[in-house]
Image 1 (cartoon, rainbow, N blue to C red):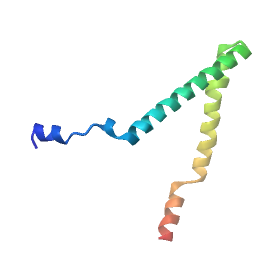
Image 2: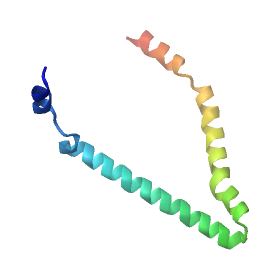
Image 3: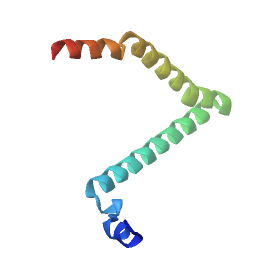
Length: 90
């Protein structure tokens, strides 16, 4: 293939309507989550009067709790068990 044929076959990814909708929704969701996180941190800072306590309670603690819970759940439900069951069923 020469360079002219490659350019002729090139299709812009931005013409894919589904991809544009997905990326727009993802961007709005991320923006909303960031604004909510900022609001929670601001509320905690105003309530406690301490930026370090607000940062710990609003940022680090929920992350540690979620990681701990889902890490434990992931170790209970291994993928190998699901794969073996699906192979036996077929």
